[in-house]
Image 1: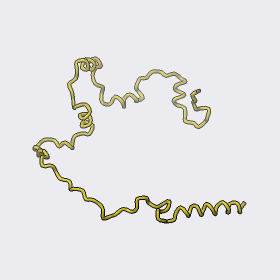
Image 2: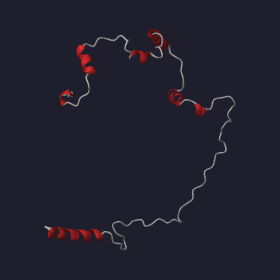
Image 3: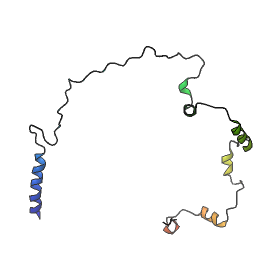
Image 4: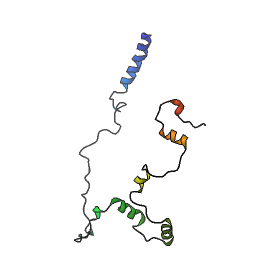
Length: 142
């Protein structure tokens, strides 16, 4: 078995070494284009500022444009800034009633909040401790 591996490995090694030779056309790993010439690098023209660069100096007392809120800038870029409310939208807002109180979400989860009775079984499921038992896993049949 060792002789078979040696007989197969010797021609393979010679074939691999033959690809690395450097002849007139180069070897397998040689570059076809040759080496780059560092003296043949061209120079690009320098960048210039156009003479009609129309920047207006800021007026004192006005807010700086980079200090604006990024979400406001995004909405202005997408939708063109604030727009007047249509009659239909105003009617919907009026029918919806007044705006919600600021802390309503934290009050909704309080213990004294009245909720719908979910039943004994649902309460047991929600209060059950986590488990790794395979019988507690739900599967969807195919």
